[in-house]
Image (cartoon, rainbow, N blue to C red):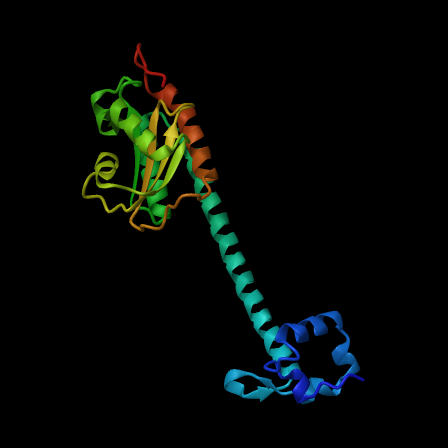
Length: 241
């Protein structure tokens, strides 16, 4: 039987190092089975509890692991419930949009449904005035081709959306200077973004962040992009890019 005395376990001894003890125990996983009396008698320093046995340390770690797993499970259940609620909200919006008879009705549906059911500060359609023939009642939804190009070049990085903070200039263009908006989701409308933008703003600066999933918003924008040419006349010289 191997004699594990105080002198052998003294990690300060130049004859044996801490990593030697670790390597030995890893190479001999049945050590404590063969030396069962050490399990209860070997004192282990345990902070507030002073010295305890290996069994106590192991049980404490198992209890903590169970607690951690329970917390993770609760978080997953909460996330699943939130995702289910979010999916249902967007499914209702999708259905309502297919019954739109005008772009202004589409804007009202987006504002009423999204702002009433989600913690968001603003929702705006911005239509490219160089692509659509916008009558006077639609001018509040207009965005110039120059502003649209600038925003896409600065924020979209070659993609079809942007999630993140909003600057003063873009905030004023998309929501109005005094809007309580600190982070945004900007989604391109049209196959190449030629129709304009859907802009959604949150008062929470961390609500929209780079790398977030855009599946539901992407599907929403595909539906909007399909309906827009049916609801809004195009200019004869509509800009395609």
